[in-house]
Image 1 (cartoon, one colour):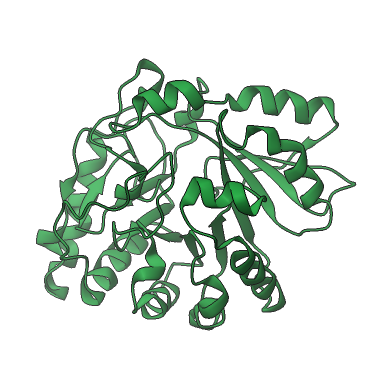
Image 2 (tube, rainbow, N blue to C red):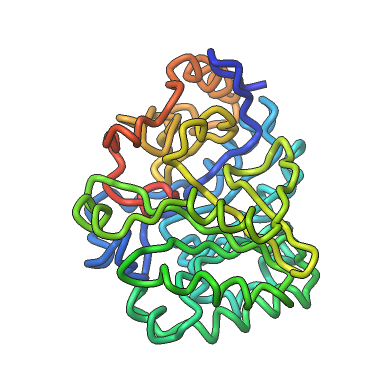
Amino acid sequence: MLQDKSGRQFHYLRLSVTDVCNFKCTYCLPDGYQCDTSREFLSIAEIKRVVRAFAALGTSKVRITGGEPGLRKDLSEIIQICASTPGINQVALTTNGFNLEKNIESWVNAGLTSLNVSIDSLDSKMFKAITGFNKLDSILRGLAKASVLGLDNIKINAVLMKQFNAHELNSYKEWLKDKPYTLRFIELMQTGDNQSFFSANHVSGLSIKQQLIEQNWLPVIKRKEAGPAEEYYHPNFKGKIGLIMPYSPDFCASCNRLRVSALGQLHLCLFADEGLDLRQFMQSDEQQSDLQNYLTEALSGKKASHYLQQGLTGATRHLAMLGG
């Protein structure tokens, strides 16, 4: 089992397969993808080896992220590799949904068990203003298709921002009354590239949490492989609400996830100062024990906190680098 010096165990791998994204979200890539890194992303063989190594060390959940993972033409094969790895029982995908309607059936057939889609507004004009694209209707049809296909673990991610969509909180709640989704409100996080935007737009999740409690929403018990969200349910709503609050004092205490970038760098935290090179151990099947040993030893360097509350953002220039 992968465990750090604080006693935290890591059951959950967030695997980026590309840092390219085709959206221009105001809080992440307002000027679009800049192509300022190598485009030699992890190969199928390298993905197979790194997932196998994590699984051998107790990882049971893999989330495929980007950038935008839907830009990879071999995404179905990547999902299938993760789903067929002994020990992996959950394969999740985080996507902006641009080709969800077209490809969700092939992804589910490949073994996808969980889907997260970013929808930062339910108003088509605001959605376009935030992302740069008029894709909301297609994304909503893709979500409905996912439900019909039997995918019952569907989550919607929304980053609330004062100058854009913070006023939509009640609209989101009403939308959830008859939708079997978990809607997660994510606090805007400061990165190397968005400091002034962060200052003007950050909305605290604690105020939303207080509203939910006052409106009789009840906490959901978290599973060991679950992400960082605090989830709530209400007997009058089909959907749930989750809050991801990285600025809360105890946010890092339950950390259970590690990140591998599309270039094969291990990031012990989303806001780590640097990545650690795993790719050198991914070049042959004979290196599996070396890769596992390196992963085990690397955990000794994981810090107790991300120190975001102190304004430290590490090497993360924008969230597309590691998929959040």
